[in-house]
Structures are given as C-alpha cells and as structure tokens.
Image: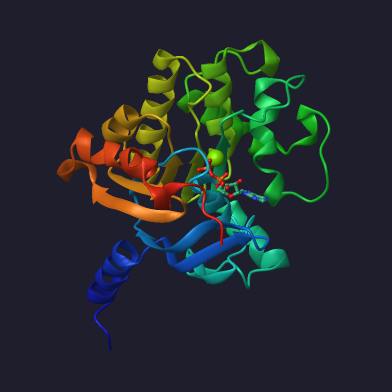
Amino acid sequence: MPDPAHSTLGATIDRILTPTITLDRVTKEFGPAVRALDDVSLQVYPGEVVALLGLSGSGKSTLLRMLDGLNLPTSGTVTVLGRDVETARGARLRALRRQVGFVFQQFHLIGSMSVLENVCTGALGTLRGPRAGLFMYPRSVRRAAMEQLDRVGLADRPFQRADTLSGGQQQRVAVARALVQRPRILLADEPVASLDPESAAQVMALISRVAAEDNLTVVCSLHQVELALSWGHRVVGLRSGRVVLDKPVSTIGRDETMSIYASVASADAAPQLV
Ligand code: ADP
Ligand code: MG
C-alpha cells in the first residue's frame, strides 16, 4: 500500500515543480518575411510573476497570445497546464482557456454595460449561449463577480456604467473579469501602458496581490523597467523575438535590465526579416 501521506506530499511537490507554462524552441513566423519569435525556450512555474520586457515589435504580444492558443507556433511546442496548446481543439481548448485570464492594455470593457455585468462576461466560457443583461447570468456568477469586484476595491459601484470609470478603475474591472472564472494563469499585455503612474502602480500592486493570494502564474508584458523590477519575480527580456535576458529580479540590476533595450541599436536588432 502506498503511504497516503507520502503520495499527497509527492503530488504537492509535483505540482510545485511542474512548470505551468513551457515553451520549447518556439518560433513564430507571420508569412515568409516576419519572424516574431525566434527559438524561444522558457519555463514558468506556479506562483511566478514574470515581467516580459522588450521594445515594441520584440514579440511580447505574440508570446502571450501563444499561451492562450490565439497564435500557434510555426515550430516548437507550447505546453500550458500540461497540454500542448497546438493540439487542443474545441472543448479542450475552451477548458484550457477557462484556466487562463487575459488582461489587455485597452481594457476591452463594454462601455455601455455596468461594471458588474462586465465582470460577469468573464464567466461566459463556462456558460452556454450568449447573455444579454445582468440577470441573465446565474446568481452564482453574479455572486462570484461581486466577490472579485470586492477584491479589486470596486464593490461600491457595481451598477455604474463601465465607460464612466477612470482608466485605472477600468483596468481593475478587467482584472476582476479575468479572475471570475478562477484561472490558474493570468496573462497581461501591457496592462498599465495607458495609465498614469499612480494608477499603474495600483494595478500592478493588485496583480501582484491576487497572484500571491491565488498562487497564480503571471506573465505580464511591461514598458517600464521600474515596474518590472518592483513587481516581477523574474524578468524575461525579448529582443527581435529572442530571449536575451532571463533572471530573477533579486539578481539583476537596472543596468542589466536596460541592456535588453541598449543593444537594440546593433545591426542584428532591427525587426528581423527571415
Ligand atoms: P510587441 O508586443 O513586443 O510589440 P508583437 O508580438 O506585437 O510585439 O510583434 C512582433 C512582430 O510580429 C512585429 O514585427 C509585428 O509586426 C509582427 N506581427 C505580430 N502579429 C502579426 C500578425 N498578426 N501578422 C503579421 N505580423 C505580425
Ligand atoms: Mg504588444
């Protein structure tokens, strides 16, 4: 008989040591002329907050979209939560996507809808058919949405129209929407690029807090090195689709992080033509 205590411990250790996200020699080409990712290998572990840095055009969005099956690799494999994203189709892909929340630079809220209804739309992946109107959502979804609104500090305005909120508040609603289906991974594509510095810091603090509370794996692209060093556990730097830096924040300094951008001036760093 296996010792149940031992097998539980074994399962726990497996869970901690198994990467949530693995990219193995991933290349992504858009047509014959653009190689957006070039031989990228990366592993991200449960609970890690990875800050993805790189100039515009370096491949950050392409990489993030691969983790949700929105982009498929030209070669190499992307494994998310133990599944090869490329072979996941239909119900399996939907199941995978339910475990992955996505936050975007432009929030992508529906401005004419209430805050609460916007958060409820985050649960659409678990429901059948479209919903129009807050009360078309099951009570359990509305309750879960209120819980997430509370977490992001907006429980006092569930019925306000989303387009009347400030940018920082809108992004906090978008985070609540991403969390409502209790994902294991949170992807954020320049979530604070449209915000003033104070709101940006608030949103990064929020992402960092919920990541710790929910043991989320986070990959977050950022423009600002300071934010990456303040809120990330690890920095991954992309230049022309290649990983040029991959280190824990505790072991790197600002200058080293800036090197992601500095050598862009060199000849090999121009947007790469295949
Ligand atoms: P970043 O997010 O770092 O700014 P992207 O991942 O958006 O970079 O883009 C990387 C490269 O891939 C760029 O050269 C961009 O023009 C190209 N690219 C991205 N998406 C597409 C697409 N759907 N079709 C063609 N080229 C694309
Ligand atoms: Mg981008």
